[in-house]
View 1 (cartoon, each protein chain N blue to C red):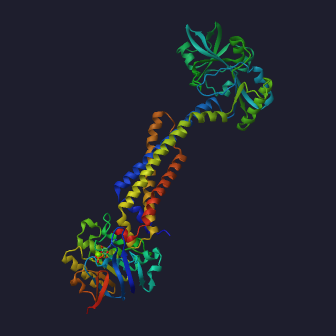
View 2 (view 1 turned 180 degrees about the horizontal axis):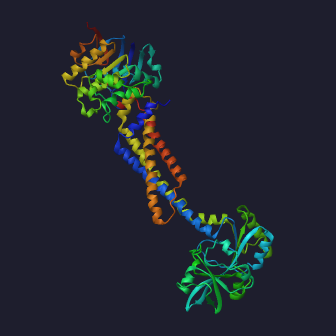
View 3 (view 1 turned 90 degrees about the vertical axis):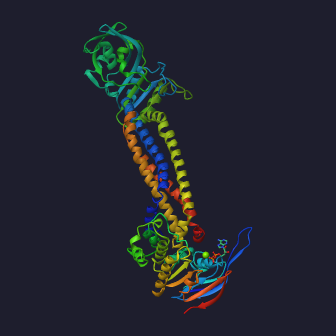
Amino acid sequence: MVKIRVVQSGFRTAWTHKVRALFMILSIMIGIAALTIIISLGKGTEEKIMAQVRKFFSPKTVMVVSGGGRMEPNRPVSFSGNLKLDDVEEIIRQIGDITDFDAILPVPGKEAQANGNNTLVDIVGHTPAAEIVHNLVVTEGRFFGEAENRTLARVAVITPRARERLFGTSNPIAQTIRIDNVPFQVIGVIGPRGMDPHGTDKDNEILIPLNTVLRRVANVDYVMLAKFLVHDERRTIPAAEQIKSILRERHSINPSEENDFQVITPVRVKELIDNATRTFNLYLPLLAFVALLVGSIVVVNLMLISVNERVKEIGLRKAVGARSNDIAVQFLIEASSVTIVSGAAGIGIGILLLTQIAKYMNVPFTISWSAVLICSVVSIIIGIAAGYFPAKKAAGLSPIESLR
Amino acid sequence: MISISNLSKTYKKENAQPVFAVQNITLHIERGDFTAIVGPSGSGKSTLMNILGLLDVPDSGSYQFEGKEVSLMTIDELADIRNSNIGFVFQQFHLLPKISAKENVELPLIYSNRTNIGGMAENVLAQVGLKERMHHTSAELSGGQQQRVAIARALVNDPDILLADEPTGNLDSESGTEIINIFKQLHSSGKTIILITHDMNIASHAQKILKIVDGKLLNHTAVS
Ligand SMILES: Nc1ncnc2c1ncn2[C@@H]1O[C@H](COP(=O)(O)OP(=O)(O)O)[C@@H](O)[C@H]1O
Ligand SMILES: [Mg+2]
């Protein structure tokens, strides 16, 4: 039975030894603050990355990339030229519920001339549906259409940096760009997209209808990759499996052979991101957790020292009628109330610092409430552990021996 | 109310002669008695008193408190009797230094089963004449005042019996007289009192004087 007055008294006596309480608070607070900051920052960073990725890769996307091996961030993509436009068309025919698709052929490092300026750009062939598939924002003019792709029209949609280098501040719409001396008419400008996960500057591209690029620029019949949008997120995995079997059959791949292509689903993208954010989400929290552990060892020791210093007090309390259980409860309450306050202070300071760090690191400010919950639970567990051992020791002392 | 027979306690330490601190003591204390225990230093008075106060246990012999054999009680039952049936006053006061006089007096109340404890500490502090100093810590009180706080603490749960181990031993004679007057007053209000002293002047206030020498009870001396 726990007497309510013993509990109340424990809450008071927790603060009668002020220096000890201060050290206990400091040693736990720092670990908790670090955990709160790191876990929340990890979540913020991940959200930032996810937001960027969603721009390139919506949850309804299935992507096929030409070439074997595994695609990892920051590894240059080399493709083998065996993903034919016919393959893409066959996939669309067989799967049936693909709402939009884009097949892409980049031709990097081409010289473009306009207005007396010339600069190196990346030419990229896209289907007209690219506007939808990649959520492109057309800021001026328009994107190219189906008819222009079919008729191999020499039209171009340009990006902010390419525009600035070729046209400065003048209006680019209806102007002509020469690429390998072939004239293209600018029909639109799209908004900035930044770097892609491979580090390619997407704002120095010139987008041209895919068929035009295949026949007039590169003179090939293959693409580097194709992105398909299915009508429902849940269809991405079955569609990916279907695409694999279609391509293996068309490419006559034996069961013992590896794919000569990769199929990437939102699940796989999430895996890649998790790998990239592992430092933030695993190692750093582990480090903070170790700090917290060290802090709690300090607390357990301070509590043990406190019990030794207070042997007389314990003896006196027992002499006036405290049961062993009452002494144990007192020390448990003392330790846990100090650690709960430390935990709350740590979370508070963590959130305070987080607002500043998030601003500085340009990461969205998010509090990971699961982190806060974990931290609270951890601090309560530390409190109970810190109280338990000294409390057991204190409770076992005989009254007269402690008073001597 | 207290009945002990053939009580003995020996302190044994490694590489040392055993000390026969209490040897075969038999005695009875009736409700309302005022008993003084006298004897030279080291004669075993404190050892006996600690056993009577349930702070220590004998090696052999029987101790019946209110007719119940103490050796058969659980440690929690002993704690409860110390809390509500016995008030113990120490020579060294044993006040907790960081808290006020009132909070010291309230300590036994923390562990009692009483539901309403409001005003009890103030009342006993008033009884020992210290109500206006109740918010002071022991460092801010004189020795006599500290011992009066300790007496208030022993009284706060209204026990039937008060045990005092040389309560005036650390005090000047004036403060000692004040303390003795408090005990006389408590006795006349019906409390059973056992008091250790080696001052015969103080012992003369008791109804009964027990002499202990070398752990043995010499003789009962009745005082009028
Ligand atoms: N904890 C102890 N360990 C060993 N010897 C003790 C202890 N307490 C008391 N003694 C010895 O027991 C004897 C009686 O002590 P005590 O009861 O304190 O006597 P008094 O109170 O009459 O001075 C003394 O010889 C003392 O040294
Ligand atoms: Mg003594």
